[in-house]
Image (cartoon, rainbow, N blue to C red; front, side, top):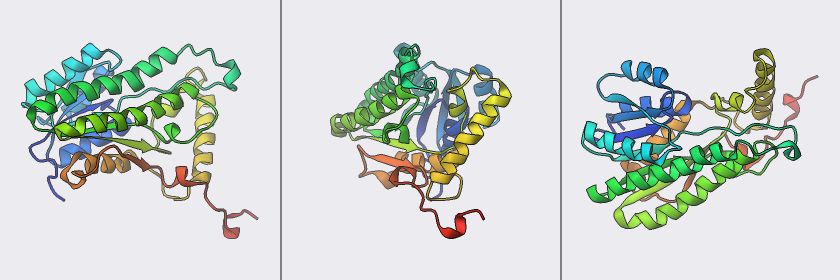
Length: 271
């Protein structure tokens, strides 16, 4: 479809880089006007400046509900409406060798960004949408919120919370013709993985990330690499009219990773 979001106004949190930036670009290509929210002022302002008059930047820390409320108000003030809210901003928790070594020091920050930020964004967007006839809210989770596994326990717990909250919000907000859905990406190259081990030096961090990516690639049934653009396509579907009868769902974008590990064929094995 062309101009699928023509006339629509969207907010994308964490929109200055990674998956968020991919969503911003896709929405603009489909005719939306977009408010980019992020804590990275310079990156966000520079990014918005390359996109034209239909994109503006708003400095926002989603862990502060007051800033989230101000973000929604700014979108309405700037563009006159709010039709789509993408609660994409997120942070990883620190990766520990063992959960027994986890001091849980980052628990409050991870939950504040990944859960409270999503809840505040959903609530404040819904308040506006309820008064204007409905809309679409897209919350970003992860396959880490679906699949159990070792490491980054707080992150996994936060993303599982996003899924359950989204389903609950979808039930309550359906009365106002507001759809609330979740995307669960997996194996998408973003800065998030590196941030879980930010204390490593550059060379060690590169080796760590390369090893993790290679393991993800080996386990993933589809061999093509996932991209932020793949997640953006999912966000576009959930934002637009094609999904008008879809709410309370989790759309997994992971190349089949959460379905099960890839089957190794004889031809795949090295001599």
